[in-house]
Image 1 (cartoon, rainbow, N blue to C red):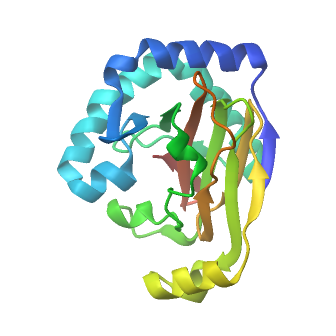
Image 2 (cartoon, one colour):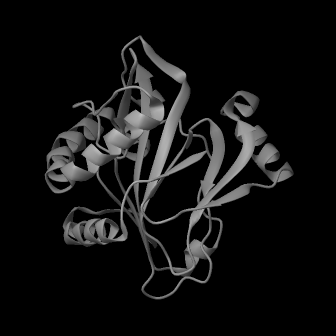
Length: 227
């Protein structure tokens, strides 16, 4: 896993304020939990229905680009440097979007799934796409008072595949490493390493956890960025 500082505190505050302004576009993912998405998330929307995902892509992408075009440009520049290869935002795929967690003591518990990022299986790609080394990235925009981060296990997809029993057994037998997020820093990791959104500590009434989320697949020498 690698971390790159790409935003100032002022830029994070500006993005935070803009995300709040777009609240009318948030989608709550669990009725009893204040967890929302802004944008089309393939792991949710394409899993439900590929056509619905595409409809949301064409609805949300213009809005997100209108408000955050400078952010996508900066993200692309930084990933191009890091990957030493060009990047692209495919028009038929969702732009990186936002996870939004508002204050709830539920987030102090390990309720997030332990998983690999296999969203690429839900999308139609060209034959030349390389699925052996998918990348995922998170950019922290707002964090709870006592921080937030990612739990990662030294377990690769090649060890367990999609077998739920093997995943549960392997993750129970090994302790995860905790990687704290830092505001304005981009965290990049392989989607084929087992991971989980880490529980928060002592959530305060006004806490929020807002992150920009995305993935990348290599195709013909260009990394395709999407959510």
